[in-house]
Amino acid sequence: MRLLHKLEYKKRKPFRDASIIIIVCEGRRREPDYFDYFDQLDSRLKLIIVPSKNGASAPNHLLQNAQLAEEKHIKVAGSYKLWLVLDTDRWKPFQIQTIIKACEEKKPWRFALSNPCFEVWLYYHKKKRLPESLPDTCAGWKRLVNKTFAGGFNSDFHPGLITQAITNAKNNFFSQGHIPECGSTQVFALGEEIYDILKHKG
Figure (tube, helix red, strand yellow):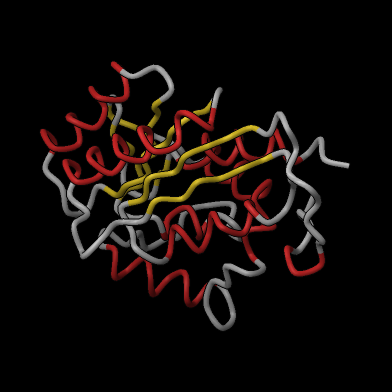
């Protein structure tokens, strides 16, 4: 099932009991552009998307951004969830463990790691299986995504294939403890949370 294209949808008056998800991203553009697609679809879902700022995307900066976002929106959010979305390519295991520990200590907080980068999640919007030659760098995955989608991944259109991406990413998910193996991503869990709300819209 393809979700409605956001440009075809006329957003209604905000739903009083909207589900609120705060998404704190390591990336400055790609991830925020992707998740913004879903914020435009249904008034029962409110996404608060927090990109990295001034190139500061290390895990400790993400935690600071998450804390500030929570403090800013908690009074109006009521019931909410907060997700930290980050890659494994640039960070050492102890840095990632800091994120995991923080999410374990803060009940509304969860994390979604991609190995090595967010482009792994984008790849699964079209592909059911890992490529025969598995890229192990973010640059390699970006090239693969650009090759997979004619004209490159389009955040105004392709996120509508989220159900397909969830299935494909889950079927290809392998991990060592909390850390996904190369070519695996936990973003499908966040995708499921978003889709579970949107699939009931009407």
